[in-house]
Length: 379
Image (cartoon, rainbow, N blue to C red):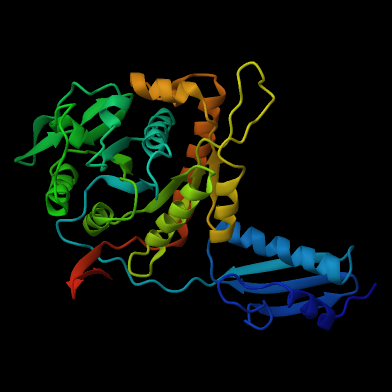
């Protein structure tokens, strides 16, 4: 069969360009179509640099041509990424932490989805892979890292760096940790207004001797509030990981979390979504999966938002038990949990590598107040 260029273009008109409301032909994304007998070459330019977006575009083109023109057509697709230019990174004096290569925020729109548990297990898995890792427990009102790393009774010591006194993070399992939990009693509630919490965070960030780190993980509090803005005001975040359960209520809040980081004025790349408590498998029925909170909710959300799904974690009693005794579940050698966390961590690392290869450094932001409302601007 001899393919016709007009038939190919008509088929491609059935594909909508994400976020533009136009099909690939109308939008100008299709830059060239060449046909040779039963072969066709399609040149397309997209604005989304994510590997997932590129693969999705290629699959949609293949399906459209095979379905609407010729099912045995031989198709070659050349995808060019034309991401919008971003302004050069703005180096903020006093805001850069020497020695820290990547800062990854772990967030959730809703509490109780296992964000801190995921952060702890990501940290120990990164350390087991040979990376130098630190964790900043930025959940001021509900710090949990001291318990999860079995260091609740420890206190950061003072050390001198370049003639200045600094806090030396507590270390366990090869991970350096700082948390407000080290400075409060177990039964003491932290009743602070935003500025006090922000000041405490700044001290743990900039008055600490973190040393050389490949990754500094930030365990953020739930929601999208003052602490989040303070963190992004203080640090240029490499990327954000969103944790959610499959249930609709959690997904709605996770969507808000993604939207917060993707605002033009904030512009922190979202590395992906992790679905926690994805399913339950009883020990006596190892081949069965029960989707207690819903099925593949985070997967569908990731597809809708065009961000990667980094992986799924089952609802397992041993994850909770491991966190309670201060030995993260990812350290259980040879178990399915170790493999699950290892796979997710590998995906996070790959997304960080892709992000650093394709995008400029994230800027810190500045916060101003206008007519009683908070406005966020690039700094």
